[in-house]
Image (cartoon, rainbow, N blue to C red; front, side):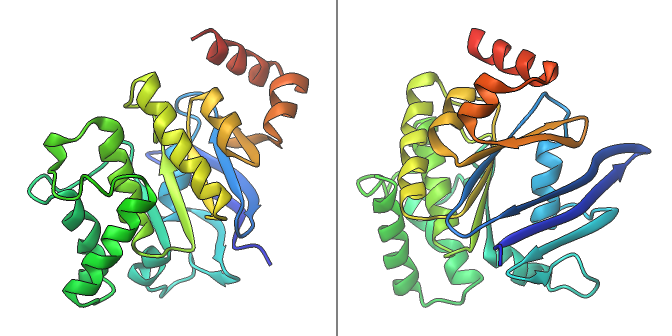
Length: 244
C-alpha cells in the first residue's frame, strides 16, 4: 500500500480550474519532484495535501486513510505531514534550537528537555549542530532553510512537503540544501518537492511529476523526461531551465 495516494484530485478557485483530475502515488522512502511552468498548480497541490486548501473533487489517502473525508482531524494529519516553506518561516525571536523544539513541545506535548534534545539531534542531522543558539537574522539563507528542514523532521512525520526549497538561495547555497535533501533520501525519508530547478530535481528524486495547466503531463524518471520526452511543452521547459 502506498503511503500517499491521490485520486482524481481537482481544485477550483475564483472560477478558475487550478488542478485537473490529478492521480498519483508516493511509496514509503520515495522522493518525487513536482515541476512545471509558473501557474501550473504545483504549490496548490502541496496546499491540498497538507489540508491548507480544500479540494473541490477527488480524494487524498495517507496510509490508506482518506484525509479529505468530512470530519477529518486536520491537526492530526498535519502532525504526520511536514511542510517546508519557500521563505523558511522561522520565528525571528527564537534561536535555531528553540525554533526546532517548539512544535514537539506544543503539538506533541514533549517535556521541554526531551524536545530540546530532539531538536539538537535534528539540527545535527542537517549539519547545523554548531548554530543552535543563533537567531534567524544571524544565519545565511541556506542555514535558515536547513533549520526549517530540521523543524519538519523534529515532528517525525510520515511525509515531508517542500515548496521551492532552493528558489530563494544562490547557486552555492542551493547545492548545500540539495546535499541535505539527498542525505535524507538515502535515509529513506519520504518527500514530495516542488521546484523549478532542473539540476536539483535530477539530483534528489526518483521520479518527476510534470504539471501544466493543472494536469499531470508526465510521471517519469528524470533522465527519461529530460532526454526522451516527445511533448513539446516539456521539451521547451527543460531547454529553458538548462539555459538559465
